[in-house]
Length: 131
Image (cartoon, rainbow, N blue to C red; front, side):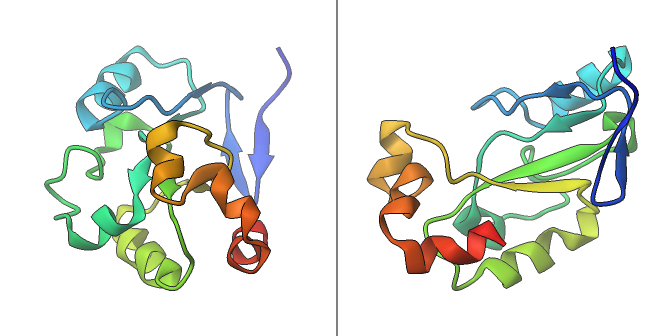
């Protein structure tokens, strides 16, 4: 296996990640995996950007974070960019090691809401995600 992976100044060692899994990669699961070790970072499940604005970030099983989880990357499902700055600011106290703006999901329920690959059908909306 190759050495550590560095992305935007964050070192992931080893360069192995636990992918986001719906209704599974919540804080309790991440804590369990953190106890086993062996990953460079753990993803949250895909989180609705609107949900982040109304959840209690310290109590939400999807958002809260414990030190034993190690590095955590929050995956976001957004349908527009108007409140993206506010969403990122809301996550700031959790000190995410990364944010994954999911614009590649083709699941029916995500497309039905205008997220995932549907964002590519509207380049002016998609452009801020691709910076």
